[in-house]
Length: 132
Image 1 (cartoon, rainbow, N blue to C red):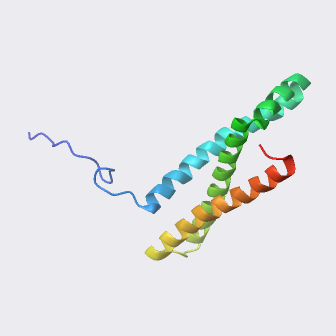
Image 2 (cartoon, rainbow, N blue to C red):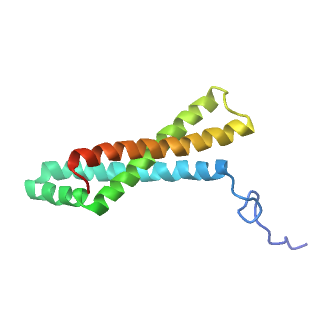
Image 3 (cartoon, rainbow, N blue to C red):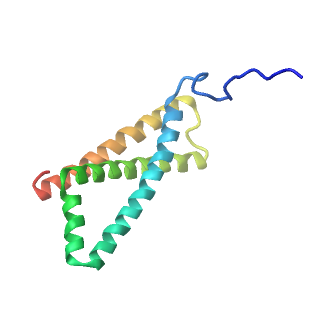
């Protein structure tokens, strides 16, 4: 019996150069995970509201700090990215956007729009709250 040579399974990072479609697919899954963790954090915040005034003050103090706002900004980008990429997938489900140029163009639109929406949201938040 011949030994099977050790080689990477296809597709593999050592064989294929990452493309935007690959990166966006991985990001879509990663942002979904972040949103699931964020849902637990939101539930913890809601439980803190019901627990006591001191618990709520502690959690609100952390959320209002700059690391807390940075995490909220990251979660909001994940939400907008996941939303935009989900809309892109709905177009695919309808049979639209399967040309290679359309794949790349819609991918870049998803990235840009997610950053624009996140920036707009946080510009509004920081304007209303007086900054970090």
